Length: 401
Ligand SMILES: *Cc1c(COP(=O)(O)O)cnc(C)c1O
Figure 1 (tube, helix red, strand yellow):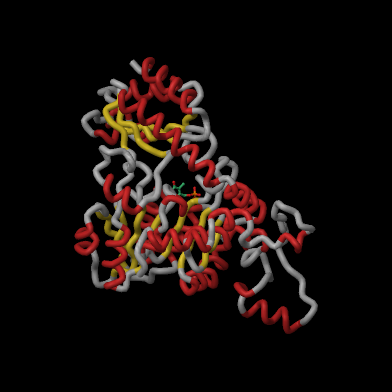
Figure 2 (cartoon, helix red, strand yellow):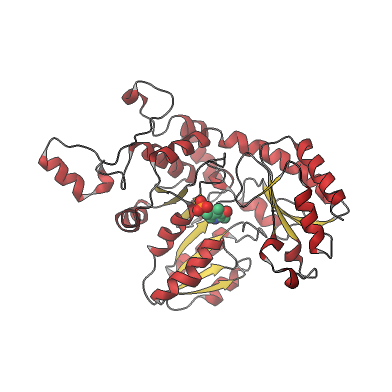
């Protein structure tokens, strides 16, 4: 296993980010030298020779046959995303949830056991709690911040460690290299949800994780106009998933959505850079505000795993949690509803700044101000000016009581 981040630098020298985003996978001479990739909106591909058709049927990953398998527009995106992840191969799905489903489902059999970080993304948890038990597959949730917990929760029949680092509410991290080492010794497959960082800010495969997935709906698309998901890993693991779950569920991304994601990728570094700067300014304002108890953000010095964050992540931006200093649910509601420009919605990663209060999922009578989680308001910083966001936050905090 090569170490990190030295290897990352070597890799980027050989496959510079600009090359990946502007050239890799694109064969412009085949489509009139157009700069922008074509949307090959076709279900099937024609053959002149019976034997060629036969060969294509034998291995759908070897050529174009039917767009539930390979499609030329999707191929461009697939190559770029694999290279960004530093992975041998990648599959692109029509949502992050379907990437999670295929990655997990491909690596379990009836009777198996999964160890997962507690409170993973909603639909990962729903799969562990509702779907997999029907096949006699059980999941143990752990506090993934302590490496012993992975060891302690492992059973004879454990086949998957499921990671999400950082988590998208409390931003808890796992030491990826350490968890990978434990898993490798026990021949357990590691799968990580890397949505928060994107491969620009964290490269789990290089730290020994087997499968790295991300929702492309968030930062990759970047404009809140399409869903997508990606799953990267070794050629062998990806081929196995392609031949089975990917083709069988038919959850591959559609060409037009793939095209939107290629377009999003072109500006990913520029957007992350901008969002990183703006996030720093917004956090500085919030941390000084008397109505804010604290913020949770991996690159904030008050973050309990700050050292680990700095060690394994190349950056952090956009998404963080504000803990409001209040005893009243109404004040949280007032704050959210008083925002004039920052919108209230699920999701993140787009051009628009958003808030999402935790109390929306908690019954009014069950609201407990002593439970700090109940006072969480998750914020996502989009592409607006920092002053525009700070002014809006300021007037809404003033109005909250
Ligand atoms: C949104 C999200 C997903 C799911 O992605 P979809 O594209 O919405 O299916 C998975 N993980 C995290 C952390 C997310 O925020």
